[in-house]
Image (cartoon, rainbow, N blue to C red; front, top):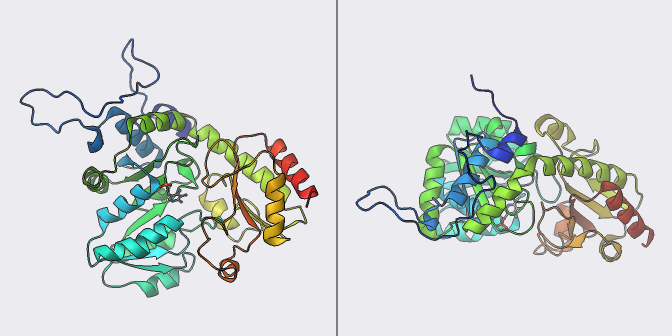
Length: 384
Ligand SMILES: *Cc1c(COP(=O)(O)O)cnc(C)c1O
């Protein structure tokens, strides 16, 4: 039997088949909309909107290998990936059961756009599997969850969803953007479809917008057909950059994991923070689940300042390393305030109710030295 390569080797090479002599070690960029085809050929034409440009195909194969999926596909954005993955399995009249702790854009897509296609969506608490069962309808066709969640880093156990999916014939769709296949591979836990915003860790350098879907050949083929007609193809340059980014995915995520734990542990000892949200801390409500399911706890961290929004703003103004910007998963540390970004549409009371009080800061810890990040936090806290 062929020996299975580890995740780092897969991230660097995909499948390192024998290379021909004089081949470029770094993949060329095929910045071409179209390709010549043999006269009289009835094979599918090669055209970049069809998703068969080599820069698109290489990374799709690599992600499939990392997720342990039959197939994968990259599209123009994470939102594009969520939309197409769901349209691939849902039809007018179908019902979708969705976690209520999901990306704001996805919530809008489900609540405002899907109704126009006759697809109904019910939002439920992802940690209470009994509420999933109660919300089931005859027309329910799929379940969607994000794990770990934003910004509380709650970790969802997929086991009850897998059982529900199997008994009711539902597709279990998981957005695992925060985990990456290095820390969590949902298909190994009963998910049918995995989605990533490749804008984040997969590319890892904050210079590309892209999304990806992994699953069975038949689901990915359906996504590919939709991508072609909805015009969601990935630009070749973005694909080339993602390939470059994915080569270092495993080492980057290992470093994010180490820095995340070090900074979270330090933060948990600071009296100026009333709470620290990190699944690697024993104080996190899902620590046991995270320990069981994840290979690493990641680089995302939530902290709550005792002094509320004013203290958070002062702290932010004093930080010298973290850049104040939305998004995550890049080499540089970013910080954002959910009250002004993902949860801006809620009232302060609703945010507090959701466990994200004003004074909450979300960090995407980058690849800087953990000691430097901690020293920067310390000097900023000293200025409060
Ligand atoms: C960013 C993000 C998305 C949307 O991805 P884009 O690439 O910005 O379209 C979806 N889900 C999660 C969890 C995200 O973090």
